[in-house]
Image (cartoon, rainbow, N blue to C red):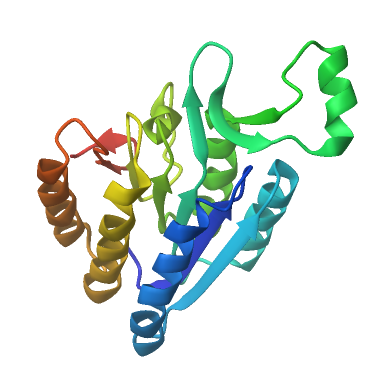
Length: 213
């Protein structure tokens, strides 16, 4: 992986500001080490799928082949017969249409396939040097039927994540990534943390589309 130069914290706000605690803590603790190592850190808060897609497009446009970038996604994720993907609060403009289609008038789903496709475009723009971490329940579903890598490395969960379990581990992961620019020390951190939360908030690591932890 090329030298890490940019970290984007993409944080979704749903009905409350509960998720802000994770993104705010990361920004506060990572800012000093980012500044010391010449890494640009941006925390981008969004309130809808439309805003999220716009932020992803901006990241894609500003990426280049000479540097590695990291995207840390904080969002609700679902895995059931009705909703399978990232979950956002529906925008008011879409509520009448949702009701006409007998869909939920409160949420909108962004499928794992669609997320994967947009991340793949960013990964291609930075020459395969995209690092993705997902503070998202069932985030590892993004690998179902995945045949083409959308990132160099990905950290995701196959189950439910609990913010109090995972907030500090993600901060530790990024501190190690900035310091070493390598996946092995990051794997060691995740392995140790998974042992603390057996059956809770377990994280997996993928190299391309291959699970390595």
